[in-house]
Image 1 (cartoon, rainbow, N blue to C red):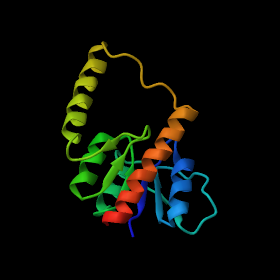
Image 2: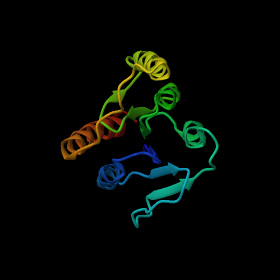
Image 3: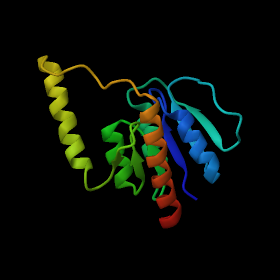
Amino acid sequence: MPAIYIDADACPVRDEVYRVAKRHALMTWVVANQWMNMPNDPTVRLEVVDDGFDAADHWIAERVGSGDVVVSDDIPLAARCIAAGARVINNRGDVRDAGNIGEALAMRELMQYARESGTAGRGQKPIDDQDRRYFSQRLEIVVQAALKNG
């Protein structure tokens, strides 16, 4: 059975992940740099990592395997997880895979350069109810594919 890993510190869609995971009885690892409230469910586990740079990313990347699902906006983490055979979805429901991760990494570099030079705009808009519904629908598709294909 696949597991779900959430890069949780800045994840605004944890509740949506919990619902989908519960529907499919999937083990869910919530990885964060600090303690957070969790559902009272034995299939949801919190892993608090140290405050080191990318500690949560390293914890996930070291454990994720083929067929697992990762929820993260972190593009370098997504690349590592894809290389390990995992399926990756970001907080807005965009699926990262071998076909688009290179472009995402390049765009990340470009945006980092633009921010450093002062030419980048503000960040993304906050997630609203429509975004949450879209994410839930997309996560359901990703989980079903993981269950079907192992």
